[in-house]
Amino acid sequence: MTAVTQEAGAPFGAAPPPADAAGDAAIVTSGLTKRFRGGQIAVDTLDLAVPRGSVFGFLGPNGSGKTTTIRMLLGLVAPTTGEYSVLGLPPAHALPRVGALVEGPAFYPYLSGTANLMRFDAADPTAVRGTAGRRVADALERVGLSAAAGKRYRNYSLGMRQRLAIAAALTQPRELLILDEPTNGLDPQGTREVRTLVKEIAADGTTVFVSSHLLAEVEQMCTHAAIMRTGRLVAQGTIASLSSGLVTRVRVETPDVADAARVLGTLGLSDVRPSDGAVTAELGGHAPEAVNAALVGEGVAVRGLAVVRPSLEDVFVGLTGEGFDVDG
Ligand SMILES: Nc1ncnc2c1ncn2[C@@H]1O[C@H](COP(=O)(O)OP(=O)(O)OP(=O)(O)O)[C@@H](O)[C@H]1O
Image 1 (tube, helix red, strand yellow):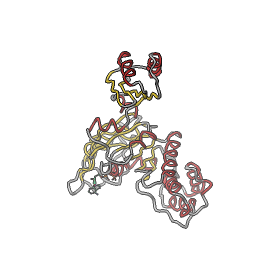
Image 2: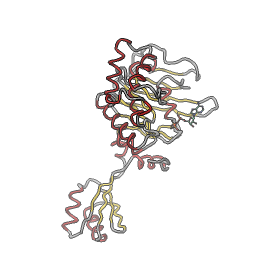
Image 3: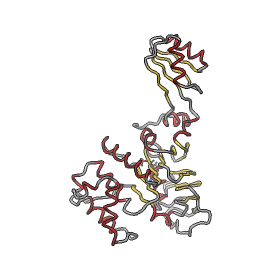
Image 4: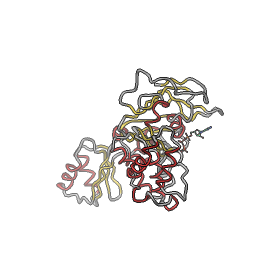
């Protein structure tokens, strides 16, 4: 890992690759901290471990330090203190193998998708000129824009524009793709397109590190997540493990609320809560189909039975005691 002790603004990340390259991790940070000149701590002793091959959701409300972290990982901002590595290397060494979308690239409205990407590629000193045409065509194909490659950018939909921005990060082989809020500002169709694309890119073997302030989005798109709050890491792990400490409940819709509550209690379910037209209870180790069979066997009219799994929002509320005060 790169040990960082210098002040903001000093050169960093230029050390030779360390001997202890971080094995199977795409990103590792240890105590990573960014204090801006005004004294504001944007990122506070962050310990992240992003496994290779994951779609890693970097989740937090606006202002929680996601963009600052990403900018540090990409060598755009110098950390104040902490250690970090990308693909087992200091960021400066890893960057050619990392694609990134931080602020939307500025595309020319009157140029086609292909022409825009060719201009981008021409500005990349690490790109091999002779292969530009093929690499650009491949990147457009990968994001599903081959058919629109000759169309002017200004005629692209919002989703197509964002897919082109992601294609710009994919004109070279990448082991890691870092996307900062890639669905921000998109319409529902564009959001769907980008989420699908992220999953497809990950399925091809690229690790994707994607920030979002939308809990539901991370749950849908990601295999792992880290949750940030005011610069600090609240939790990280697989999506399943993050919520595994929380209780799964069963919800039974029925006109026979009292009978249903009695049967659930007899079965051994705990925290049975009858309400108007429904009963909920902690499912524990019980199979939902067995609960349903028992209810029906006792003559309870079951209109609906649902297993209510804890969401990332429940995890966040459980850890911080606060709501996740953004639109989900
Ligand atoms: N250049 C800067 N100088 C001073 N403070 C900054 C600077 N950049 C960010 N901050 C502050 O650091 C904190 C974290 O900001 P950051 O942009 O990293 O959060 P974020 O989670 O990415 O939020 P958003 O989604 O709104 O960008 C915020 O309080 C922000 O105001």
